[in-house]
Structures are given as C-alpha cells and as structure tokens.
Image (cartoon, rainbow, N blue to C red; front, top):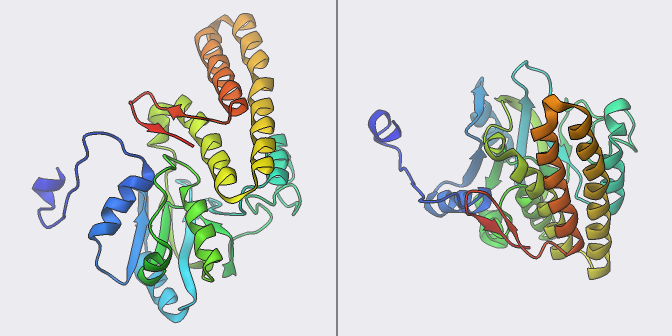
Amino acid sequence: MVREEFPHVRLIENAENRGFAAANNQGIALAAGRYVLLLNSDTVVLDQAIAKTVAFADARPEAAVVGCRVLNADRTLQRTCSMYPSLPNLVLSSTYLYKVFPRSRLLGREHMTWWDHDSTREVEVVSGCFMLIRREAIEQVGTMDEGFFMYAEETDWCYRFRQAGWKILYAPVGQIVHLGGKSSEQVKSEMTLQLRSGILRFFRKHRSFSYYAMACLFTSLWYGLRVPYWFLRALVLPQERNQGFANAAIYARGCARSLGGWARLSCKRGVSAGL
C-alpha cells in the first residue's frame, strides 16, 4: 500500500521485527534534516503540531529533545513525561497508589501524575511516541541503544543527552492523538516482560552493580507475588482458567529471569533482547 499510494516515500522493509530502537536507527541513518522526529504509527497529528514543535525547538537551541501534548483517543490527557527509573520509583509505582492519589507529588512522582501538562517544562524523559530530536545532539551522543528491544530506549537516550549537557523539554505548543499499545497488544505477554526488562537494563547500564542487583531482586518479588494470585484465580473462575494459568506462567518466567539478572529475554516472534 505504501509503495503504491506513496511512491515518493523511502520504504524500509525488514524480514524480522528488530525492535523499536533498531528500527528507528535505520530511519535516522537515512534522515538528512536538522531534526529527527520519532512518531508512532498509531498517532494522529493535529493542527500543525509538527511545525509548531519545530518552531519551538528553533527558539530553544539548548534542547536536544522536545515533546508535545499527547491525547488519548477520547481526547483526555496522555501522560508522556516521566522521571528516570529508580528503586523508590519502582516501589511507589508497584503499589498503584498513584492511580488512587494522582495529585500526590510523592506517589505520582515517576509519571508526574500531579502535573496537568499545560505548561512548558524541563523534564527527564519524554515518550518516544512523539519525540523531536536535534540532529546536532544525535551526532554528539549517538543513536538509540539497540540493546533495548522495546521500552526504556527513549529513557536511556534522554539520560545520555542530559549527561552531555542538553535539555529535554516538554512544550504544549502542538498536540497529537496517540491510540497507544497497538503494537504491543499483538504480543501482550512478551511485552509485559519487555517492560521490566528494559528498566533493568537501564539500571545495569547507568547504576552500580549493587543497585542493579537490588532492582533485580525487587522485580523478581514483584513478579513472584502475582503468580499465586493468577493461579488461584484460574482455579476459582473456570471462565478465566486459560488466561489465568497463562498469566501465572508469564509472571513465573519474569520472577525467574529477574532473579537471574535477565541474562536473556526472548520474544515469541524470534527476536531477542539481551541485557
């Protein structure tokens, strides 16, 4: 369809799913502009959002990355800014209390749930669903780390930009709709593992070994506590038996692999992302 209806577009076709970072790097290698825009396929760009974000970035040369306002399909706010992963953030997010008390600066610190995203702000991370990156900054710090298969690769990139002295900015000058999760829904169980795998890889890359080991232990506990819940749910609710046993197996895998340091994590589709 792309070849037939958009013949001017350079189409890159991979024989296998190489992951978010590797695929974006292929596009970055071909790009020639002063900015690179990461834009998910399940998005709708509203009201000149790209042009407005570029104009903002032109006026802020200290910014390596600029993110715009992102909406859900029902036009409610989608929170796309966050803090770097940390042990306190792991503990707090695992309680899910930020959903009950979203205005709490403590409980909602990782995903900044207390903030309405209605003002320009320097942040630590913006989501890769819409990420405008300055070419000069990429040339300085390099492209995305392809060791991340899916999740946390933009976190790692933003961290490297800030370490090099650049700023990461959020600016609500334009907005898009992000339907969200359409790719990961196709392999949902594997993506459950990939999310925590990416976070642990970030710890191993940027924190001490002892910090990383503690994160592995806590993540293993997080998975382990969910195994009996889903197992019992499968026994008690016959209509959910297959899904319950499947979820219990997924969490058991996550528990074992976290405790073992996530030596290697494989996806159903034959693509692996090692830590």
